[in-house]
Length: 231
Image (cartoon, rainbow, N blue to C red; front, side):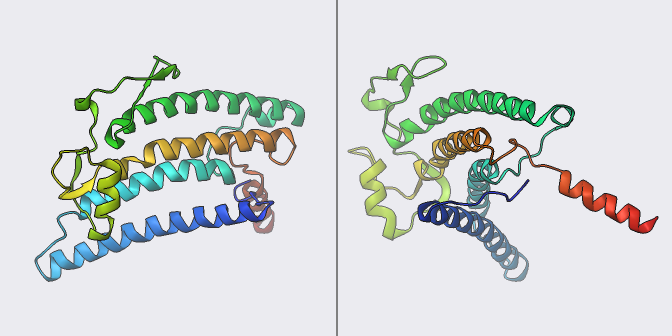
């Protein structure tokens, strides 16, 4: 069922708390930026030119971060018609097959995510068509750390570390936030997804989790009780 995840160690509880805090902050910042921009537009006839790009970036972070979080607390929706027709042992086996398929797909996504983000972080993408077999040899023009976002401003407090990390030698200083920062959620989110899928497989094997999708048994029981009360 959704929300059944219970951290078993102090580190697990800390990570769980950080994840929930990050998700809350992302949602809160989206609402705040949108609200402020609406007030500026309709009350003061002004606007934040970077609000749309920032909101879209925050939403992308929320989605990719939330996919992994959904695997952790078993909140993804799915069709469980076949699972409900077989024994609990068969359910566990089918769930492990589903996890294996998801792991293969996530591994393919991980390669694509890294290969897409790496040049913007001045790092080499991998070689190989399906799975990484090494790293490409980078030429000076392959590094794309100089690419900024379109409108998101760069806080001055972050200028020095971000230019040290991402700005190639000889390039002009950033005028906007380097695009490597918002794009970093792509490999990070997929890596978290891989980790949570492995964790889910372990919980299924040990009997602490039934499957990958949210169970509807509780909802069905509530609806049945309501029907009996109305009868």
